Every structure is written in structure tokens, then in C-alpha cells.
Length: 460
Image (cartoon, rainbow, N blue to C red; front, side):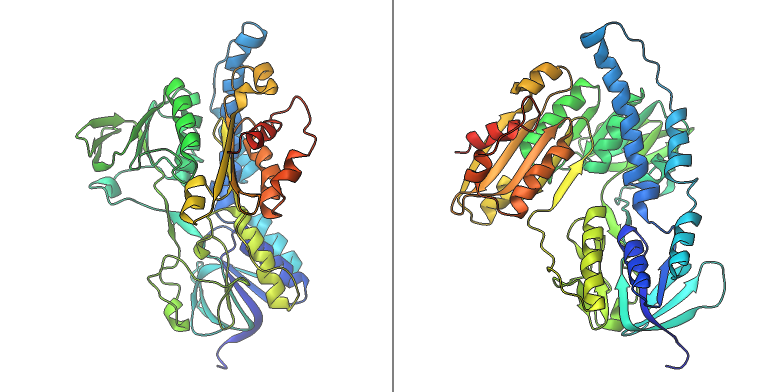
């Protein structure tokens, strides 16, 4: 073992959770080696949350300007993608350069490496630097943290691999929008980007193999979003798969499982994510190298001297999950006390317009769990704030109560600011606040969140 350099901890994968953990452990006085084969900061700041929400914000501004005619008089709007591309490139990603993030970690005291990291046994990692220098093996006396994240998945469609299709990583880097776009996948990424490009004048078609958009959300939310998309000119094909793709003379030609032929200037594949677990050396620590997730306990332990956080734990491919888990792993590594991981009140938001937000269990999940339920619903546009808001106020609030305990176990909000309103309900689910207590509260008037009171009154 003398060939290995000794450190306290090696963090493999520097997405938000890994980066925060490496910084915290270094700040606690540990010798930390932090490794990523791409950009320090991971998918979120360069290709995910941050740049896409800038794109969403721009498209929402166009939509709101269009609504002004009904509310305030004549308005003329001419869209331009140039300001969007500029904001994403300069403000969000620094031209996809992670130098600032690297220097921040180095200043904290971590050794930062761009390279491919592979487990080489318990508490051992070999790093092959991307600059071509010799591999280095590290022995981590405290242990190793895995945060390798995921990458865009490629569906097995005949001919697709040989075409210049987009993933989310390409979509955030475009400087001009295409005339037409086929989006493969009706999940959060597909729905957000479909609406963004449609609002910039792109003719958009979504091809979704499932029977509804946003399949993890409540059916009511999926149906409402589909209505909005139809009104905005987005064509949605449900229960349909691509069977063949070709590309020639700057055009994509696609065949669907129904036999329909589609043509488009561009194709965006948003059909799920693939965990970065291949060739990570999991077999050297007794784990299955073919697994899609790494099983962890409630302290994020995956084995002797091994922790895992983020997407690969299978608890939700969200930045906020990785950040939550990083804090738990940090405490465990440092021997500090703290609450174990709990996911009963996990919130998630799709930033379409209207926003689609949820926390905890859906009605179907709660029934599958054998709970005795009461379910309450209300339409957001039926609230006073919805009435005064006018166009763009469409939405709903749905709450799911465990009737035996008298507490909420899940909730959904669709509407303007849905991702903010869900915070109220996330507290209720997380802390198991009695429904009677929620009913006894004073709700500010006239607000969108006051619709929660109406949904609680509807529990039956």
C-alpha cells in the first residue's frame, strides 16, 4: 500500500452535493482530494437548474407580455434569443468554465483534480488525470464519497445515434433557435424546454411513450399542463415511441410507433438519465457494477469507508436531494450527531408555466401504501387571487390526508408560484402538522396560497 498517497477523504464527483461536501470537510481540517472528470459544480450550474431557469424566465416574460393586451392595453412583442444565450453563457456558466469553482475549493484547502476516478478497493481510489499525466492512487483513511451523478440517456432508436440530436446539454448552449423541434420525452426536462422553445416561435412536438406528461405527478396536474400546451400550440403525442430516425440535408425524419412520419429541424432527447456507475470500480468494494443505484443507509453509508450521495442513491435526481444528503454524510464522516435521512416530505418542482410542484406521496402512492385517505382539491382560478390575476392564473391545489393520523402525506400545487406555495405544504408534511391545526390558521387574503384552505375544506 506504500504506492498510494494518504489523505483523509476522496470525493468522487463534484456536483453541488460533492462540491459542498468537499468544501465542508476541508473546512473541518481534513485532507481532501476532490475529483471530477468534467466541470466542478456538475450538471446543475452548467446544463441544468441554473441555465434552464434563465431560459424559462425569458419565455415566461414573453408569455406575460402577451397577456398584457387583455389587462393593460396594446402590446407589441418581438422575441430574440440573443439575450437568453448571452445570459446563459456569461452569467450562468462563465462560458462553461469552472475555474472559479476550482479556485474556490483550492482556496478552502482541497486538492482538486480533473480526471477519471475509479475505486481500487476499500478506501482506495485511482485517478487518471484528463491532462494525460500519470494515474495517482489515493488511500483515504476516513473513506471515499461517491457522487458521480447521471448523464442524458439515449433511447435505443434505430438511426438516432448517428444524428446531431440535442440533449439538455446542447439545448442550453444554442445561439439560435430552430424552426421546428421534436422533443423526445414528456418529463420535467422535456416539458420545460418544449415550452421555452415554443414561446420563442419554434414549432414543437412532444413524443411521450407514457400515457401522460409528468408521469410522476398527479393525473390532474398532467391533464392541466397538456391543456396549456395545446393552447400554446405545442403538439403532444402520448403513448407513442420513436422507432426510426434519420438525418439529411439539415432535417430530421422520424417514424413513430403509430406509423406517423415527423420532420423537424432539430430533435431534443429528454428521455431520462443514465447513472455514471459504469467503470467506477464498484466490484472492488463488493458492489454490483451493473446496478443503476447504490444502496445507502440513512447515514449515506454504502459500505466500509464508503458513502454515496446524489442521483445514484435513487432518492430523486434533484440538486436539493444531493445537498440534503451531503450534510448527512458530512456529519457521519466527522462523527457528529444529527437526524438520519428521511424522504417522506421530498418536494419537487417542474418550472413550466404554470409551475407544477408536489411533495410527499401522490394519491396513487398513498393508496398503494394502504393508507386510509381523504383527498381535497380546489381550482386556483376559482380563488379571489386567481380571479384578479386573470390570464395565466390557471392551476390547482390538491392535498392527500392520512385519515387515520389526521395529517397530510402529500400535496400538489399547479399555478403561478407553485414551487413557492409548495413550501408551506412541505412543512406540513415534514412535521406531520395536524390537519385540524392547518384549518385553524389564518391565511392571508387575497393570495394564491389561500387556496390551500379551500383544498383542506374539501377533504372527503
